[in-house]
Amino acid sequence: MLQCSKPVQRYVQLLSDREIRSLFLASAAARFPIGIVGLALLLLAQQASGSFAVGGLASGCYMAGLAVAAPFLGRSIDRLGARPTLLACAFAYPIALGCAAFCFAIGAPSVVGLLLSACAGACFPPVSASMRSFFSERLRDDAELATAYSLESVLIEVTFIAGPLLVALFVSAGSALSAVLFSAACALSGTVAYASQRALANRRANANRAAGGLGPLDNPAFARLLAVAVLYASAFGLVEIGVVAYAVESGAPALAGLLLGAMSAGSVAGGLAYGARTWSLPPVRQFPRILALMALGIALLGFALPLWLWALCCVVAGIAMAPALIVQSMLVAKTSELQHAAEAFTWSATALLAGIGGGLALGGKLLESAPWPAVFAAAAAASLVAAALALRQPGPAA
Image (cartoon, rainbow, N blue to C red; front, top):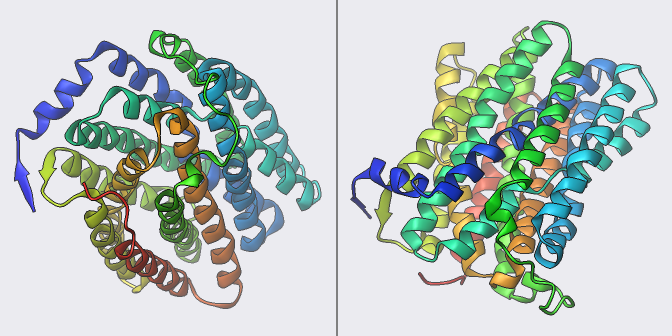
C-alpha cells in the first residue's frame, strides 16, 4: 500500500518555500488556543458549577459557535480576502472569550457563560481554513498536498500536546481562568502576525465570482463527506471528556492534560508518517480504513488498566487521528472549486467542531448516569459508523 520515498526530504522541500515557511511560523501562536480553550472552559465551568454536564455544555457551546460562524467567515475570506476577516476576528475573539471566562469565574448564571462561550467560538479567527485554501491553490500535486496537510495537522496536534500541558500547569496552580486568558492573548498576537504576511497580500479575493448559492455544498460528494466528518469528530469530543472523567475519578484532574497530550503525541507520529510516504490507494479508499483503525484504538481506552498502560493506550488511540484529518482535507480540496476554497474548509471545520461539540455534550450526559468506560464505547461506535459511511462515499477516485 505504500512506497517509502525519502521521508524527511518531503518536509524539507515544502518548507524551503519562504512564503509557506513564514505562514507556518506566523500561524502557530494564532492556533495555540485550539489546544487550550475547549479543555480550559470545560474545567472552569465544571469547577464553578460542580457539574460535568455544565462543563461539557460550556465547551460544546464554544465549539457550536465556531461551527455555525465558520462558513460565513470562510465566504468572507473568499469574497473580501483574508486580511480584513482575520483582523476583525483577532480583536473580537479575545473580548468575547474573556467575558465568558469571567462569567464562569465569578459564578454568574450558567446560561450567560454558555451564551458568551458560543459568541467567543463564533469569533475564532479562521487561520486554518486560510492556510488550507492557500495550499489547495498553490499545490496541485497529491503528494505535495498530502505533505502540506500533514505538516498542517501536525502543527495543530502540537498545540494539542503543549496546550493541555499548559492547562495542567494552570489548573495545578489553581487557575483555569488564566489558561483561557492566555489563549485570548495568543489569538490576538498570532492572528495579527499571520494576517500581516506578504503571501496573503498577494492572493486575490474572489469578489468577482458568483456569491450566491450554497457554494461547495452544491456538490453532493462534498455534503456526504461532511456527514462522515460529523460522525467521527463526535468521537473526539467523547474521548476528550472521557479522559477528563478518568482523571477526575483517579483523583488528579490535572492529569487530563497529560493524557490528552500523550494522545496528541501519537497523532503527531501518525501524521508525520502519513505525510512522509506515497500511498498507492486513493484518499477516498484510505478514509474508511483509517477510521476503522481509529475506532480500535479508542476501544482500548474503555478498559480499566494501570495508569502507565492506560497512558500508552492514549498514544495508540491517537495514531490514526491526524491521518484521518489529513485525508479529509485532501478530499475537501478535491471536491470543491478554488473560488469556494476557504468556505469549503470552514464547512469542513464546522462539521468537525459540530461533531466535537456534540460529543462533549453527549459525554457529559452519559457521565451523569454511566461510568467513564461507556463514553469510550460510544466514541468507538461513532468511529465505526463513520467508517461504514465512508465506504459508501463516492468522492473522487484519485
